[in-house]
Length: 185
Ligand SMILES: [Cu+2]
Image (cartoon, rainbow, N blue to C red; front, side, top):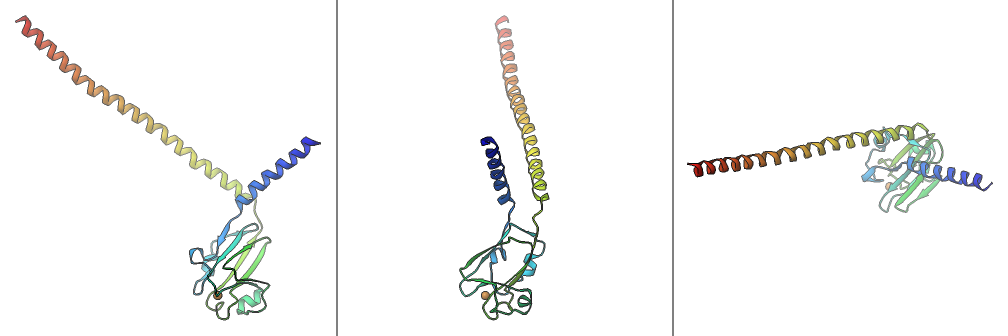
């Protein structure tokens, strides 16, 4: 029974370690943050939001992050928000699949671009499988390229020491030969 329970704990721990690594934290508007006169439709395009990801809104005082209905999002209607925050750093965990709508609750700001709609897809299991081989592929060539470099370095050191040694040997031999000729004559 004890080993059986330990097995479950291990499996749960392994799951807990895998799941957060797959989650992506998206900073809305990237370095621009949550501001007026920014196109958040362009920001969301090309991004795939999945369950488990989260949105981070960074903004100065005088703005809010209001979650609203689809119709309030389209018409920029403030005052019916499902939730509202004005802390300056709002984290929205994307826990369920579907589209979520956020606007700034300050009158006029939504019309000035402070509106973002995020479509959240169900978490896919193919993402970790695709991520793992790419890491392996990048590691393998690096190790392979290192080995020839070391071999070339060793070979060049050997050949250079040989080329340095041989003229000295030749010079010594010639000097000894010339010297012995002088003695003999
Ligand atoms: Cu605002």
